[in-house]
Length: 326
Image 1 (spheres, rainbow, N blue to C red):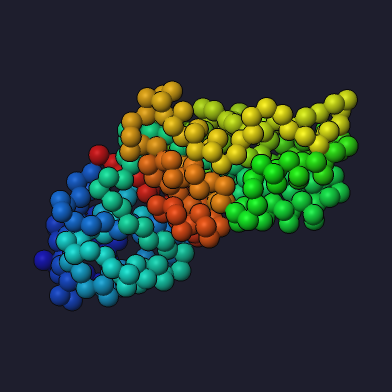
Image 2: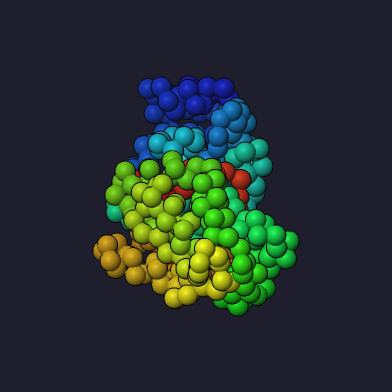
């Protein structure tokens, strides 16, 4: 065995030929992702350069656990190291690794969804797939932005009935010129990392769907832009070039979004264990609970407490690193 310094750990993982190192009494070994040691618990540290890898190496040393390590390789442009231990990672260990700036630590369960098998991801749109709440932007262009934004925030926190709040907010748009819809489509700000995330999932034959409490022009634009498999949202009513302040058809509410997970999984024969959902607001709770693996993304507290995992610092590129390879 060779001695491992903080600065050489990642060099050893990438280029080293020896199977293990002894580091101040801590035994470190190496594995490949698809062959994690049996009977171990796994923790993945996801980060973006130029995070100091020396800080991660130092935290590994401080943990004092006998570990097997692997570099997790994905196409989406972040970095990830997997730690496997015969001993469970406790709260102190999670805090140790999460305290490193710009590093997020995630527990990886043996039954975690598998990247290189067909699966489905159902996404919320506003504040998840895109950076804005479309209703708030439309309201601002219609001159009623402040009143509508306040209601939106209360709805996303779970303080108001979604359908009631939707119809109330849309009514504020009565008389607005329909041109504001195209204006917003033309500048729709994608959430950082969504293009890379979708591309990687699709490269492994995953289906990607948007189910939004927003509006059809915006999900349609997003569907075309990212080559998504399906997109669902609410239909804004327009007459003679003006918004009439109503929506028609089935309202895409929290239950509709939850049903979308099951309906689309059945449509494409996606097996149990391979159904993901991601969102940010309280109205996404039924959807992430309907999924086999529910992800809170920069989320409101109610959703974050109930999700299987929460991405709180990194962008959407982190999602593929949460999935296993077999």
